[in-house]
Structures are given as structure tokens and as C-alpha cells.
Length: 377
Image 1: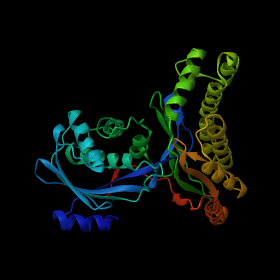
Image 2: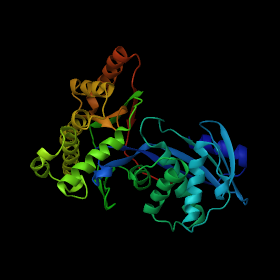
Image 3: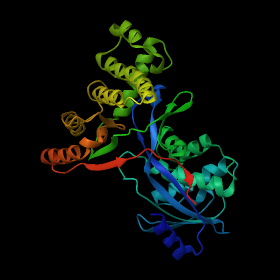
Image 4: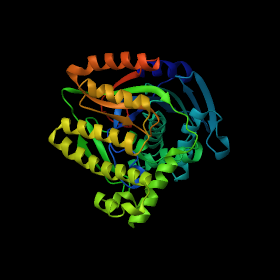
């Protein structure tokens, strides 16, 4: 990919210069916990957005996206926002850097990526983090700290792309570290690295390639359930609740709200259990907790779907160590922790059975936990 980017850059803009990259991400465990003040456990992966960037001495940005074969120019003032959605991510990063009192000057860029789109691997956060890192390195002597780089990406989504996202995706893209997952406390933003070197195992995503269109807003409804229960328990968020508290107020809570809260409180503890297991190198316990999370998301939080439950069942039948739905739900991927010797048979079985039932094979992505935003050369 690097050579292709350099070739395109030379052809379009002449002399080459600096290359930057930032990764997509997975989240091993800790789902729907972010807005409950809980923990998430993401890691950057070995699939990234890569960009060659060079100052051009002009008051505008000239950028070419190799993957969709489109060239865009835009200025650096608020009224210069480009129409193309992909270019708005880059424009938004430039504006958010400027709004914080830092410098962005005109530059030329060519970028490409190998993060599968639509698989919940946060390609947009990788694009934002790649250009935020580049703007910091090229124009600001790396004075912007890493947390602010992640916030720049998050603000870009909020202010220029119409997505009111949390900070996990950009955080993982910026802070990612090879062979480590990051436990992020979504309330305090404190974080800690945990070793993730599963020798003898592979991490595999199975993308169902389905996304169910939903009439109502299930995420808002789940959030409202959690807030109602927290109010009943007299705590700021479910992060502060234990199962004993929930059971003590069972008569005051609807059955549906109770189930939602039961999942969230259980997930808080599962993340902490996985952290302890990773310190011991105990991947069997990690896998067990992944299955428990899937069960909770499917039966209690009710954000799974038939196709993802089926992939989870196949994983169990094939002896896969751990498997769960990853992401918001109602479609997308399962994330699977698979012993090396079972990997090929599992993939073959999953493809065959899923295609027989649903008419198409799931997409398969092996991923390795890798570094986040960086200068490549």
C-alpha cells in the first residue's frame, strides 16, 4: 500500500515526503458500557489508513482518495467545507486543530486504506487520527497531546459529519499499542494497557454482512432504560451499581429495564475479570467471558439478531474459545478467539453453514493487535 501511495503522490504532486498511518480497532469486551460510565477494552489492529502528506505553500488542501478515485480541493476556513463526505473528515480535523489555537497550512495528500468498510472497525476514526497526527507532526511540533488528538477526531464527527459518537474509536486509533489492549474508563478517561499476546490463538472477525433497518431508535431506548434504573437506585450511572442494589429494587423496576441493567452491571465485572485473566495469560477465561457477553447482549440487552446468534452457535459447536457480537448490534460482526488448530475448520464450517441458511457467506478478517497513529517514514 505504501509503494502505491508514493507512486500516486509522485505522479500528482511531485516530490514525496512524510507518510502517516492510523489503525482501525476492535473491542474485545465492554459493549454498551460507554454511556453507562463503565469500561471498554479496545485495541488497534493491523489494518489502517495510510497517507502521504506534504506542505504545498498554498492556502488550500489538495487531497486524492485512491480507494474511491476522487480528488478534492478545499480551503481552511469554515465556509470552505467540501461536499464529499470522506473529505469532510479531513476538513473537520483541520478546522478542529485550528479552533484549538494550533496551526494548519495548505498541504497535498494521497491516502488509501485496507480497513474493511461497514464491519464496525472504525475506518472513519482511523482517517481522522491519521490526519490529526500528521497535522500535529508537520505544523505543530507534536505539541498537541494524544488525548486532544482523539478529541479532535471525536469533535470532527460531531461538528462536520453529523455523528454524535463517544471517544472510544478515536482513543483506540491514537493510543493503540502492539500486543496490548487498553482498558479505558469511560467516566474518568483513565486508561491502562494489558498484554494481549494469545500465542496459539487467532483473533478472527466474521462479518455477517447484514444490517437490520430498525423502525425505532433502539440505542436511545437502551440508554433511557439504563438511566431510569440508575435514578431508581439513586446512583449517577449503572457503573456505580451492583447486582445486590438491583435486586433490592426489583419491585420498582419494569422487567425490561431490569434485564437491561442486569446486562450492564454484569458486563462491568466481565471487563475487570478479563483484565485479570490477561495478566495471567489465561485466554480460556477470556473466551468464557466473551460467550457470557454475547448471551447478555442477545437475551438481556436484546441487541443481537438471528444471524449473529447463529454465528455464535457455530463457534460453540466448533470448539472456539470465545465468541461474541461486536459493536452496537442488529448486524455486523462477531469477534472470535480461536485456537490455531481449529481456525481453518471453523472458518470453513461457518462459511458453509451460514451460506446454506442465509444465501451468502460471512466475510472473514483475521486481525492482529497493533500500533495506533504513527509516522511511518
